Amino acid sequence: MSTQIAVRLPDTTVSELDALVAAGAAASRTALVTVAIQRELRRRAAENDAEILTRRGAADDLDGLVDWTVGRFEIER
Image (spheres, one colour):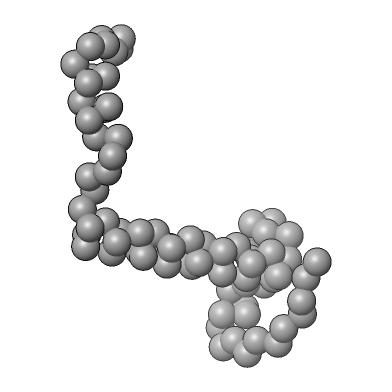
């Protein structure tokens, strides 16, 4: 399912989108805009995760298990 929305973009941005579509870099303007929005949403989620890790620290309840495992198993390279 999808919802149609109207977005105003600068003429230069639309020209760049059209050039990418014409070059075969994307199937359509919609495909490019969708990828860009999804990438931005993932970036913001990662930024939020990084902020949480900064506040709380990276330690968790599995650190002891990792330390135990590393001390008992040899990793082949």
